[in-house]
Image (cartoon, rainbow over the protein chains, first blue to last red):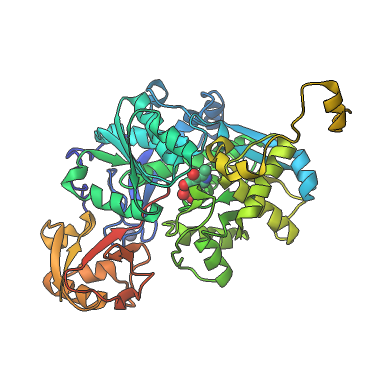
Length: 431
Length: 91
Ligand SMILES: Cc1ncc(COP(=O)(O)O)c(C=O)c1O
Ligand SMILES: [Zn+2]
């Protein structure tokens, strides 16, 4: 089937060269389409994803090339849909964030194996979204888009604003009007247009989908809509980094937050690619998905044994995960079931408790999404569903400074005293 | 009952490039049948072999996801707007 460029996309986008990316292929039916700013299969509406021509053979050479690369996601450029000279272009250069060995948290949770936090709060705009946007920017340049855009629960908006500023593109991003103040400020400060929509994220998404089909959206690259196949590949770098940081070894268990389910789906894709390329030994791994109870359509479907995800209207403090209609939900279900994992959810008070637990034990301040993954990890261990003797990696995908509102009501000074020693002693603070 | 249907880019080959077409029907099911009569082939793109909405297609009647309403039996009042949209990724 021929490529049908979306209305208003530059005409001569076919034939662009994005490294090892060979074509787009439909995840549902396998139908192939040349590289372009298209995201849904003409035959079945399934999501298009990148098909690669990876260099075969020289595993050692590839490993050495990666290890010699920059300390950011571009070290994996041979495995990503980006031009060869990507590292030389202005970009936010996210990635290669810390994999923190979390022994104190492990003790508290009863984990006897090794527990690690992949801490993506260290990215340029303090969430994993910088990874996906960095790849999408390269696609936007390749296809000649002049405005970088997205529908966002907040983190993506900040990442797009920053990346567009660095790349010298115009940006215009769309968010639900009632997000956390920290995210609104971060989305606005880079100087692009920021549009609050009166509705929830799913309403924002629908609006953006209509905009790209309209002449009003001419020249617009929506990182998570018409650039989605490229964007989504950015999440694979989490899988690559985790394995490289474990000494080119697969973890036994991963706990990943779910909003649309794209990140979890692409982490699985990344792990499979490393196995296929011979960069890690093929062993079983389990992927667990984490949602907030107030927006748990995938967890619900998992528990009910369904393979379709019924949308919900979100109501949770974990706004970054508040997608009631998750596009990759069915794939998350497939992956959790195939790998022997699960999808679980926790309520808002437990999310706050988990944020504080991680901060208290490891000195890592997570945003609400990180509270969801830590909270779900705790629940899975308590229920005996996550094996405490194995190597487990838990993702913290965003920084707690973005969602101060969630913990502010229950945190503050532990004592207020007058500035003298008597007052200090009276407060019982002497060691 | 006449409604306005917004057509996503990937289905516009069936509508001669038109982004919006009108269709008749009191329910979504009837509207889709009418679309198929006037734009042969479009039905099989939106519905699967069992006649259900494909799992990666979202349909809205007046801004409401039909899965929150009555699915294919969702009423389509006169003058309603119907949108057919592929699922999109996260934010
Ligand atoms: C901090 C954070 N973690 C995780 C996610 C989930 O990503 P996905 O939509 O790919 O499931 C999101 C976003 O949407 C997010 O903002
Ligand atoms: Zn397909």
